[in-house]
Image (cartoon, rainbow, N blue to C red; front, side):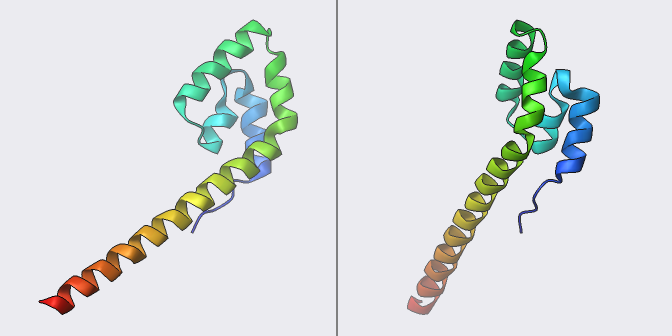
Length: 92
C-alpha cells in the first residue's frame, strides 16, 4: 500500500533544507530533478525555493498519484503472472 507523505513534515524539511532540496528528497523525487532544482535555485538566487514552498502540497499529491498508479500496475502484472503460472501448471 502506498502512503501519502505528510505535508507538515515536508514543510519542515523545506524550512531547514529548502535551498538544497531536502523537501524534494523527502518526497522522493529523482536525483536528476534534484540537480536541476539546485541549478534553478542558483539562477534565481533562492527565489525558486520560496515558490516551491507554495507548490509543496501539489508536489506531494502528484508523487502520491504516481506511486499509486505504479502500485496498481505492479499488482496487475503480478496477477497476470500468477494466472500464467496457474495455467502453465495445469497443462503439466
